[in-house]
Length: 121
Image (tube, helix red, strand yellow):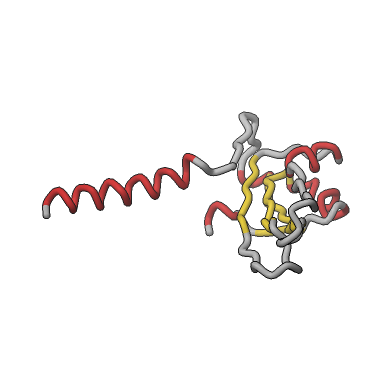
């Protein structure tokens, strides 16, 4: 019984640490501080269940914003559940980016919206 408790505790430990290890967050070295940055988000979805020929490659959030001259300090993705019906997309996720506060309007022009810090959810 004691060995089982150790295995369970170790498994829970691995579960929590692996979520952090496999996070797609990328923190920039030149982060200007919390008072000068904010988070934006945009939902991307595509492809179709039951149609493997139709491919969808979601955009790279950092590249998408960098092309518009918006520096990105951190990114995160939250996968969304999709249904299994043939009319449903096979990819859906919320793409988050931490950007300078003075660039929010530029991000809104390409479809992003202001949001709360997704790392605190």
